Length: 254
Image 1 (cartoon, rainbow, N blue to C red):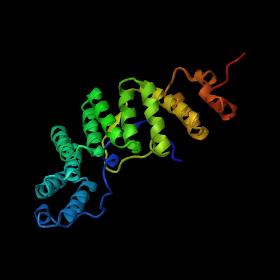
Image 2 (image 1 turned 120 degrees about the vertical axis):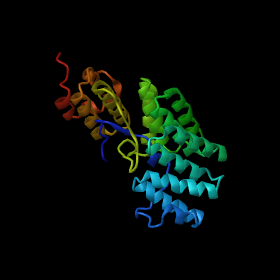
Image 3 (image 1 turned 90 degrees about the horizontal axis):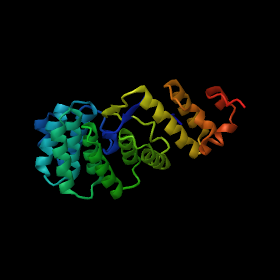
Image 4 (image 1 turned 60 degrees about the vertical axis):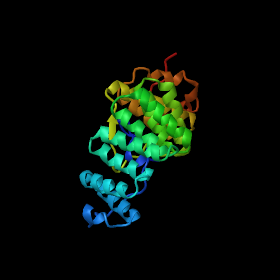
């Protein structure tokens, strides 16, 4: 398993709620896309976004939603392109339109949470991410997003619950990176160290000793101040049997 690198860029945006991208750069102009079928136009717009040509992607999706003004998925993708371009106000408006077109579209609620997170409106982000999870509990990315937000609020116990659920759904959930995402970096080395140790506990509880030891090394490298807790916390009882632990954290002297 690719271990989670906690130097830590938390990817919380576009790959979390989108369908696959077409990889080729579209040859059609957005004007030509207006004459295409809605399905083909969507693929062309996706290709612009995959190539990070957000200006063209926005124009393309705007043309597409004019054709299908009640298509929640198209509004959501328009919002993702707007978010990538840094136009948070427009992105929020597009995501809201998506929820109005389909109140049960979890990706739109998730992406409203993303906008709120980026704008540091964490309480609102929690509300939207919970709404998305309520509609679909099986999306690991939704749980990662909520965990990130709880961590930003210093609610580490709640963050652990969400990260654990994400890993139950997808063992790679914390090691994936988005092909077209925004990232929110933890602000300080201390916060990174705290998160590393929290992840070590999660992996220990899951019986993944390799990932646990990797996270503990990262916590030590980032200066976590309570490394000795590995010899006190019951969740590390199995990891304590691994001689490599002593190389990371020397056992207490009697």
